[in-house]
Image (cartoon, rainbow, N blue to C red; front, side, top):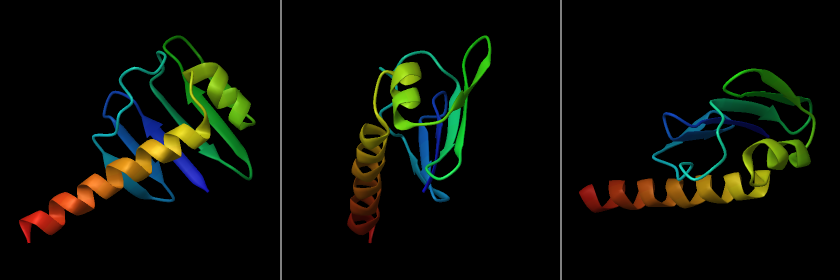
Length: 88
């Protein structure tokens, strides 16, 4: 799975699908991170970039786990789909 989080834009991407308006405001200060569960990734902090090798690294730098990011993504995707359905 590939996940990207762009905090200023409040977007979480999983495998190329976005969930705009995701709840990422209360998370520690970082600009973005890109992570592949098979190969790792990188996080952009305000003053440097760091390598991400595991869910534990994501938790260390952001304050929440990869699982919570996925949950927030799924919650927002469900809201987006409900909004589309309501609009017809």
